[in-house]
Length: 494
Image (tube, rainbow, N blue to C red; front, side, top):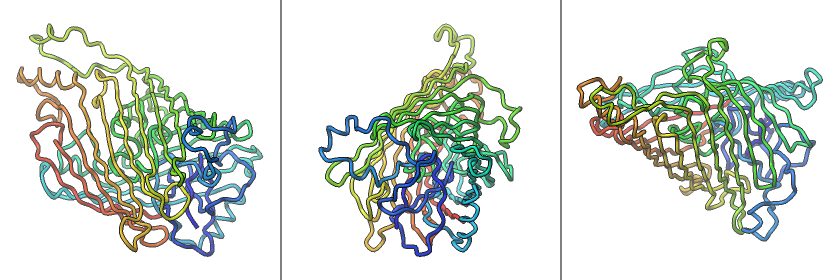
């Protein structure tokens, strides 16, 4: 048995009676958990939560790379682009009959735990450790079985987060979260993260999602990125911008997704743009004040390369936020105004390129059975974006140690460039003897992070993941010493 990637909102499947250790270790805590499936799954009646069918039964540029038919495309499920809990199976398979009974009547669920303990052991502002956790209930209602609305599904995600952020307490970093799960939840016991409907049209070749959704669960993300703590659910250069709502912050909007050819997926949508810090509970919709509209578009090329049909995912995306943002040069002392002229600010554009490519196959014919190389680049409108640029390179390698075929090693280096306007404004205020802002100890220019993890499947439904991080130039200056962090991430699925 292997774990296949889910398509858009994959249905939860019951636990098989006989279970073996799968080579892929991904369940999804976004719109739906991954289902266990055979290497070549049986054909079933198409529903809106299966992989999209291509509008044209052909390939685009992939046809130039491999003369053979894309044989694995019929057995490799499309990669799931949502925040994962990288577990296999369930801790309590005894409730599988209850799951099946509920699923047959239109209700599926998954409950997961993610805990992160990170300690700063060198550098930063002081030594110490913080802990944070996330409890997530993912639900899906089949409105065809429940209400007779065939083909419609309602997805909901409710979660609780608690703990403290090591970046703030011990490292002295206030722009990049070194631990993943402590953010934007408002300390609520039941934070509403997602609530949206889904429907497929035209013989399952076009899919729409409408409601309250997290933008970076759909755009600029991937399962591989989310095996890392710093870059989940999207690179920092994307998710730090207000228009890109980041988990667990949802916003009103919708996305349409289609596959023009077998190797291309196009998605675009319209979303409300608002402050990431408003409505921290997720339930007080009236407390949100729209600042504009976010217009994202993303094209993904998914080829299979070489005689082993190694899968890859190459994404080009763009987002235009119509909100008006103040120029980050800020308030400048009168003596320096003549040097900069007018700085009115304006809307924000984000461009990104992200790629991952399997470089060896090990343990099966599904998309997580092997090792990947990753790379990406993000550019934001510099005058109104704290991070004007980011690039990253990394690797996610399966089974590199003898007798440990299901362990996964991840390594990623990322560089972040601060907006030149932000730097200039801080420099002018420093020369005038004025405050440069809270937690700013000098003109901020750039920073970098290095993260490594080793994921260990302990038992079905439980992953232990030791983590190492190295933060260069905390606070985006050279004032605070580089920080060394070690910790443990634990993921469990009921």
